[in-house]
Length: 136
Image (cartoon, rainbow, N blue to C red):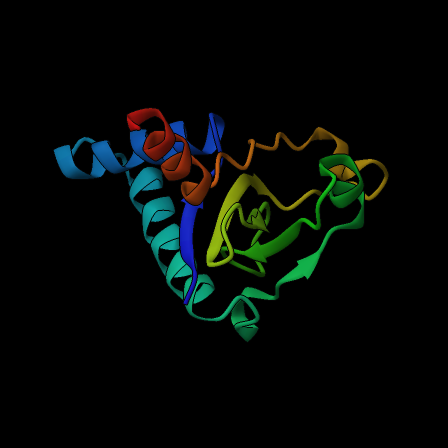
């Protein structure tokens, strides 16, 4: 089972804001729907990144740009502008980091150039090693 992490800063900010609005009951209908879709997607992704309903596949254009294999999974399908998440494995072995959330690109030419990707973040193992070293 994988731990789902949010890329920094964009995805972490989006998720934190969305989660706070849900807790405070100030989320509008679109935000509530997005939250439900993300929760469902993250649950499936953490258990099986190849879950058939996610239609997970790698995106070569983003892989070249990011310097690591970037995967796309569906939040929903058969709807105009259906949501997609973009993710990578890591930084730690049991992590999946969500680095982007976008509607499905409509135009084929250079469609993935417009997508904003978050940074993966630091390994928990490395940060724990650094803290341990500083305490000595």
